[in-house]
Amino acid sequence: MRSIAAILDLLIGVAGWYYLFYSKSAVRLGGIEEPAINQRRQRLRRINGLVMLLLAASFYAGVFTVNIEHTPQVFAAVWLSVLVLLLVIVVLAVADLRLTSKLRGKH
Image (tube, rainbow, N blue to C red; front, side):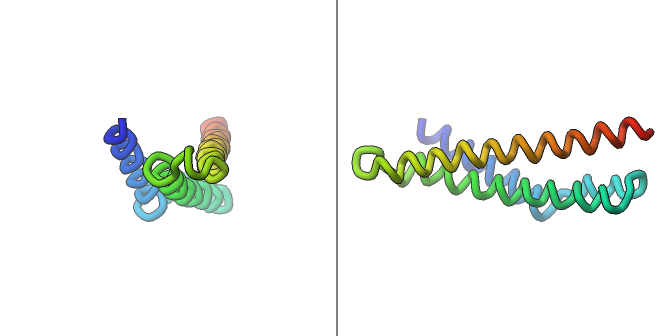
């Protein structure tokens, strides 16, 4: 179970790193999208990458470092932060989808 959690954690971290530093898909939409909206989309994706990195760190802490028997309050706080970060990722993804649907409506 811990090896699956480690692999998932690594994949989340790599995806966040990619979104934060290397993803250029939003930049490529600059030719067909208004500059202000495209800038917003780029910011959303970079923030999402940062949140994914924070999620990877929180998930790692929840699985590998925090023990429920020794520090139940910290354990609860770490897993609550994981849930909040997942919610933030979903909200950012929905915002990106709304921008995409507006773009599709115009073209």
